[in-house]
Length: 465
Image (cartoon, rainbow, N blue to C red):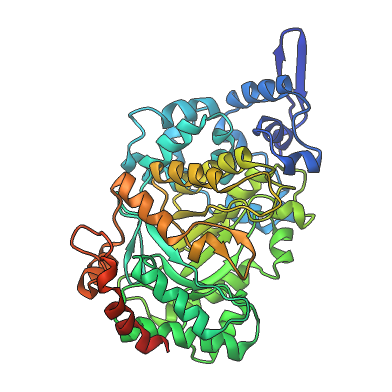
């Protein structure tokens, strides 16, 4: 591995950075997690010097110097061993700064970006994001196209999907059904109907799978369900013949952080193979659903001195292996120890979306914050609007934007309606057609007037009761 130092002079001060991971950390926009880890730039001057030095680093350097040692980390081995040299060839001679200039140019078309994705490592994506303004992150992400399929088609240009999230603090089936009907009547649910269970009880998990499956099958809804339990529980559910559509797992960017979740790459391999073998998808076999979030490796004590945004991008390197239907960053969920305020959450959300899309993933975002963060719903309005401009694949739909089980603030069914109205965004086409057939929306996608809602509720209540 190369160990030559990096440096840049600002005025009369020569700033020296011992290795690549130090340089990446110092070049990262300020955030509380890196400060907590003791790896952030000590001053604005050092931060600027690091960005200048990073801009001059050849992209090929990321293939010879790992930020987390190859021999100690299976995520590093996955990233290096799966690197596509032929896809990388068109940019192999560029520096990080040169890649940034190319990405914002007219040469970086949707076709070119799709071809490049397998050739970029997560560290390259993270590095170039550190040189980009918010508008750059939006511009480039919008040019990236990632389309996935299970029972509908997600990620087409000009579309925005919604994960219908009907959580309940006691897994009460009537409460989950009520929230699900609420979401469907407001046109949400094309990404998935996904429940975070309050319990790990296998009988309860099985019942949740069965209830969601019955609702989808009875009304022939072109969507997919997911019970967001641990991957080991989902494997057991499949072994018990449960109607599993999507396999969920939270993942992170180091082997140690994934171990803190109780998950290995081998377990993900097993689960992905098992779900595909069920052949429940009617349009495709993208069966995995991953959630990530900046700060996880730090909270697990498994960050190796690497900044949290670079490690977040490495989690996308894990996700990419499985051709997932959905990936989303739960951007403000961990708390102010990692993203302190609205400004940091907004920047992190744009970075995550950019890096995920650049690496070829169907990136969505849980635009969220905890109640002890220095953020509010106005900050979330700003972030979700910027993400919609950037072509985000999907957002969350939570009744009233207040998750009563996970106790955090997210986005509501009505927030998605706002984004569709402002940006002219459509739903997944198969789901949109179903809404029209059900009378929930008109041909233009607008929600039916209140006068017809009682009849619609009666139609949906049968399978959910």
